Image (cartoon, rainbow, N blue to C red):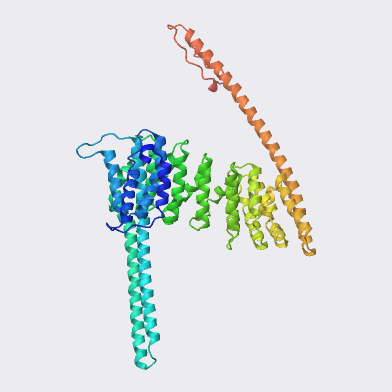
Length: 567
C-alpha cells in the first residue's frame, strides 16, 4: 500500500504498532519468525527510501517520520538488528554512489539527506541496543546469583545444628561470598566492554565511521557547495546523534557544531532550534565537555527567533534544575527572559526562578548581586529593570538575607559609573525588608552612597526606606532613624548645590571654549586673506624685475642709520 500510494503516515503508524511486538527468535520452523522476517524486509525497503521520489521535498519530509519509526521497529523485532542496519546503509550507499561497475558522479540532495538521516538514527539506536544487551546480561547474572543464594539458604535451614554442620555452613557461605565477588567483577567487566563499544566501535571503527568524513564535510560546508536547507539540517542532526555516542568524538567536533550554529542563516530557524536541542542532550551526557561552551548556549536566549529562544530556555531549565549546568555567571540572560515579548518564555522563566527558590541553598539570594550589576550595565529601560528586580527580590524572605543583601548592594555604589546605576541600586534597596540592623548598616556605610543623594530618584528611594522603617521602629532605633534622615536631607541639599555650581562652571567653560574657537577662526581667516594677497602680488610681478629682500621688521632699530661720509 505504501509503495503504491506513498502513504508515509500509514507506514509510520504500522511501524509504531510493530514496536509492541516481542523480539523474534531465530527458528526457521516458526511461523512467527517467518512473518516477522517478511515484515522486516518491508521495513528495510521503507528505511532505504526505495519508494521515495527524488526532487519532491514534501515526499521526503513525510518519509522522515516513517523511516525513523521503521528503524525503531527493526531494532524491536529483529534478532540481529545490527546486520539489518548494515544492509540499509549499504543500500543507501549504492543508491548514492552507484556500484563499482556503474559509479554515480552526481546525486540528488534529497537522496543524500535521507542517507544522513538514516546514518545518524542507526548510530543512536546501536548505542541504545548495546545498553539494552548490557542490562539483560546484568539482570541474568543477578537472577543467577539470587537463585544460588536461595538454594544455599534452603540447604542450610534443612541441616542440623552440630559443630560439623556449622563448619560446613561457614564453608558454603565463604563460597557464596567468593562467587558474589566474581559476579561483581564480571558485571564491572561487562560495563567496561559496553563503554568500550560505545566509545570506539560504533562511530570509531564500525561501518558508520566510513561515512563520518563525508558527513563532516557537508556540515562544515566550507566552500558553500551545499545550499539545500534539508540537506544541512539532516546532516547536522546526524552529526549531533553521532556526538551523543562517543565522548572523544563529541569533544573533537563541538567547535564545528557551534560554528554552524553561529553561521546559520537568520531565516533558517529550524537548524538553530534543532542544534540547541541537541546541545541539551550533549550537555546531559557529557557535561564536562560541553561546560566551556555554556556561554554560547546562553547567548541563544537573545536570538531573533521566538522558537529558538523558547527551545533554549527549555533546555537550560532542564539542565539547571538537574544540576547539569552552573547557573552562576549567565543568569542575567535568564532574568531578561522575564521581559520577553513571548508570554510562554516569560512564564517559563518565572517557573525556573520559582523552582530555584525552593532549594535550601538559596541560589537566588546568591545570584542577585551579579544580576543587579549586569542588568544595570546593559542600559535597560528603567521600567523593565525595576519589574525584573521587583519579581526577584520577592524571593528574599529571611531577615539575615535582607541584611546581607543590603550590605552587598551598598558596597557596589562606588563601582557604579553613572547615576542611573546608583538609582537602580537604591531602588533594589528600597524593595528589601527593613529592620534595625539594616538602619545601622545604612548609617555605618553612609559615606559610600552620600555622593549620589543629589539625584531625586536616589533620594526618593532612600526616603522610602526610612518611611518603611518608621512604621515598625522600636524606641531604641528612633534616634538612628532621626540621625539618618538628617544626614540624607543635609547631603541631598549640599549635593544639589554642588551640582548646580558644577553645571554653571561647565556652561561657563563651554562658553569660553566657544569664544576661543571663534577668535581663532577669525584670526585664521585674516591670515588666509593676507596670504592670498601676497600670492596675487607675486603672480602679477614682471619676471625681469629683481625681487627685493624683505626687511626684517622684528629687528628694526629706532636709531638712525650710519652714513658713509666722503672726506
